[in-house]
Image (tube, rainbow, N blue to C red; front, top):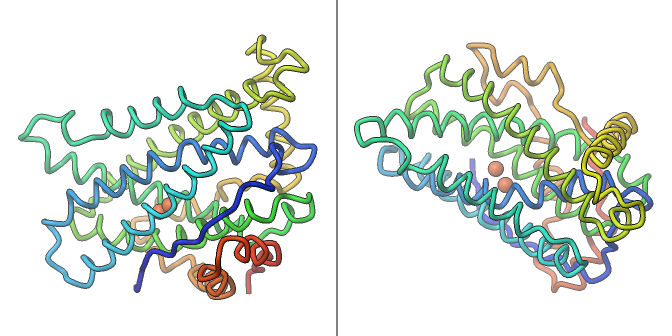
Length: 306
Ligand SMILES: [Fe+2]
Ligand SMILES: [Fe+2]
């Protein structure tokens, strides 16, 4: 697999605060990802760097470097949008510090004693593989759906989410290959998924709640920011409605159960073609100057599954 970092540039100047029009909650459901993903992506890069000396296969090493370059590029793109959120009056510093602390400290190499380091690395690689599978499942739905366009979502944001999503689909195979190369234990793979899904869903929901409460429009005008219980209930209802309307992708049961099969292989899903189609369709726009990229992003559409 030939992975290399693409470096699209997104201009957020024209992106409204509620970039899904009249839908602050769907907007913040995605904005929560902007807060969580960069810390997670930088963590994956560190885990892969730690694993590199144990990988003798030159081809796999090259793919791992491509993976790391892409994750760095994703994190930088999300960070740029987070700065825009702060400029729009939403204080996200607490959530960012929390995410960075969790990934650096709780999931860092230093938390385990020396004799357990090797197994800890295998456990974290199993977590990377599980997270990348979750990312790929969500990304497939995002690439395959035109619901956000129909809702009038900001085209620049759609371009960011779909570019990232398409590269995540490719990452699933790399993460699995590295895990199989270093360890490959089936119980560890299943245990990692059992930890990854509830942890991801809980933190994602908490970030979405926090963003809705801190929103200078819906948070202040209704006072929900001052009544966290009501804000969470209202946000949960609104997020469920976003899922029902197909605006927020969910974890498809079949894809998740498939991961738990001992014979699971990433190539079983067959969605790499979907990712390649999208990346080929927008490849030229990545070489354009910033303003032209934004214009090209406006014309990029969802790629329907063949
Ligand atoms: Fe990523
Ligand atoms: Fe990834």
